[in-house]
Figure 1 (cartoon, rainbow, N blue to C red):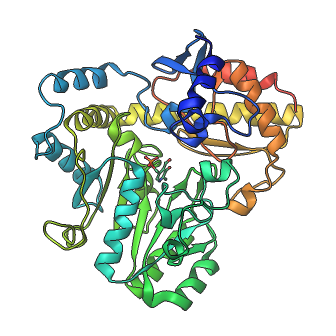
Figure 2 (cartoon, helix red, strand yellow):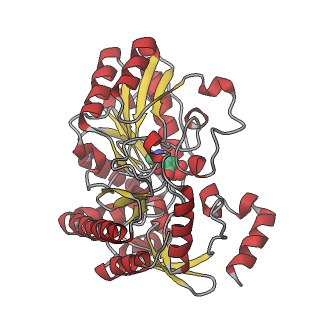
Length: 425
Ligand SMILES: Cc1ncc(COP(=O)(O)O)c(C=O)c1O
């Protein structure tokens, strides 16, 4: 069936035809391709058209689609273990892996999505500190939990929604908004509310207002203020974990987190999330402590198997994979900058490893959400249409990152550049 026919039919049964808003291509003037299959860096739609995929399921598919070892692990485990709702050794293997690979994580709790991970981390921070308020940054996205839907990034930004209906005032009265990379904005919130701040949550390398890395002295300030007032510093590494480096964003900063959240890559493409931190904090969780959080599907054997297959492969090929992804990223970034200069296209690129955003702005530096808002939406819309029509799958929003995998090659990057060269603003 044709893509648009399936999409039209889907709209009768699912709001906007989708199960997650950004997939609808709203505001792009297009309907989305309906994806049938994927292998490596290529995905194919229902009409048989191929795309080089730079979305990668919004990050998780760092090994490329249907990686041989991940598929094998899923097949093998599902022969004898689909779900028990009981402890399994696979969960222990995952817990050990994550604790061993993150110097700031001594214990973990598995959940089923990034949203669940961040909202549970906040609840734990509140339970541990016995305080209520949290600081988040404008343009950062931490999932669809009520308390985070204030000045959020990602699809909330893409669809131009200031927040969300259905969120009671009471749910956001404890959410304080600060400006990314702006120390004064954080300081003044601590000065005013310090004794009631349970935690600060941040994407240390943001991806949900486009890629923006936090600055070192800004991160140090967060650590200092949290220490001064007894608040917890939470790194949301749902996107950056095992992505910006094998050790995630934690490796990039002197300041270290009290709690960390992961999802995406650690599930190998299956629904997954996790939060972790120091034993003393994590043991506030039930059944040891009194912060209640639970999940029927948490730590599901098939998810653990897919995640471990991915993580083990990344660990065993660490140098080669991350170097490859970074050098492909550099090839793409340099090529795009050259073409933009030749063709006088106003843009700035932020990239960290295999995470990259082209900001169509005349600003030389994009450091926060205010800067992102200077981007030209009309140029993005034209660029997006041009890329998709020519077989390059990129996120349908200025406020997202595009991703690279180990399955991408120089040929794929050159194809991207060739298509971009033919783009006229
Ligand atoms: C940094 C960050 N945190 C949390 C989330 C929410 O994760 P999920 O969509 O798995 O609920 C996302 C999703 O993109 C994210 O990028």
